[in-house]
Image (cartoon, rainbow, N blue to C red; front, side, top):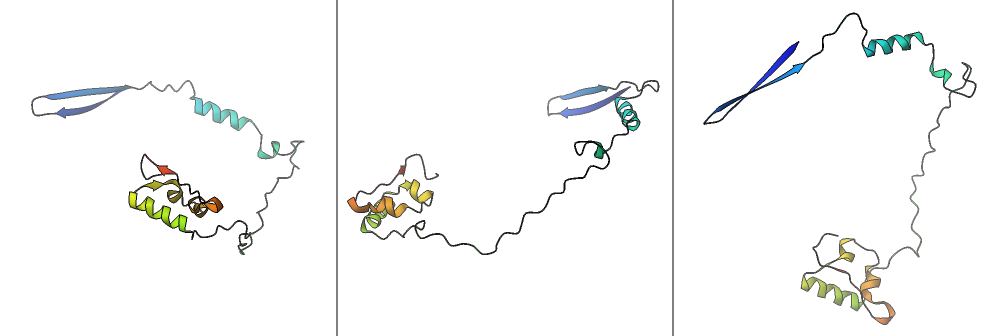
Amino acid sequence: MKYPLRRFLSSASSQVSVVVTKNVAPVSSEAPSRLEALRAKLSEEDASVHDFVGADGGSDATLVRRRKAPPKSARILPKPSWLKAQPATSENYKALRSTVRDLGLATVCEEAKCPNIGECWGGGPDSTATATIMIMGDTC
């Protein structure tokens, strides 16, 4: 049996008609479909979920029940003092920050919100400051 589907495309100068047909195989009542054959095969089998649970496969097998995880503590532990970064207050940091801002440069340190920016830009004991400049734009 054929089911025609027509779609008309029109433009100012011409009209084009496209016909798409779909061939459908006739369903015979003699041969069962694959779905009906599968349903018949499953109805003949007497397997249940309990056959697949446990080593012996018998009906007395116990189902394994999952337990919920214990609730987490609502108290948030403070960070240790050695992990906390000190705020950047050195003169080297302030000078480098004003230079970077005046030149309109973007740095990886600022874009990534690095907590150690004071150590790199401050220069440490030898007063050598380091800043990583992004040359392709301002998005890290």
